Length: 124
Length: 250
Image (cartoon, rainbow over all chains, first blue to last red):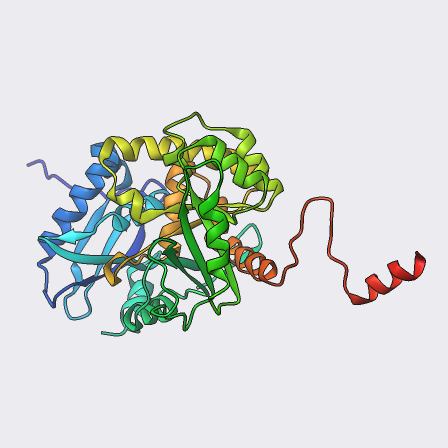
């Protein structure tokens, strides 16, 4: 019997990543579902650069790293597109008719250092 | 957070806003590490008694001028004297080329705002930007205004902005970006604002410099202007000893 084995790419062939830690502040104390945040981010990045931007930048929201109490979530993206992501976030002004302010707390190369630097030390 | 670009630390961040409350100030100073904070006010809504200037580094008066006599600019110079801030200046928006050129040539303004919108009326002009660099007039981009535009206008704005930044980089004109926020939720992190320039011009070093060093330069420049040490090209200000030496030689 033929077994399907999924091999991982070699480290040199894998795409490089940056983990961008983002905080949002809302008009009222509303705890957004992660899926609403993902849909808003995709909609705004589609407005900015279309499908090609989303595909080329490897934009991906990490669902496991969503901290509701601190209003923080983490996105991974290619290093060349970090500035574009900052611009996309700046253009988000409201979610469901409520004013929102989104900003980048920091950018990191690994999840471990992102947690240590920007999430554990940040205020509620 | 310090950022290194070609061996230079970028840490002097600044922002220009349209409002000042305690919540906003705290966010800007603590979380966003803003070193220089400026307030912009319309010269028509100007009321020096209601104005709170605490925790402010510089003050700007916004003038929309379309008449060739430049009467509004001359009037607003007098209004500035009522304000007790170290550094203060005038920001001009005009859609007429003659007005902009006249004000820049005579050095009546300190900065021009939203030049891409003005360039909808006429073509991008190299001479105006060259004269701005000679007379120390800086360019300011208003992010709040950009967001409020429709999609086709945004495209035009970015197209003109790219051309302006290309010339500004060549002629060494100082460029600033401000959030111009009217409430707390319109505030933006200065480091994020620099990406607005990056997206338009694709030059990270230039965009970071514009959001850091240029604010320091602008603050120093406005402060000097208030001390009446207005420096024109070809002239320089003498200090007390140099004055005495020059007089003794005569």
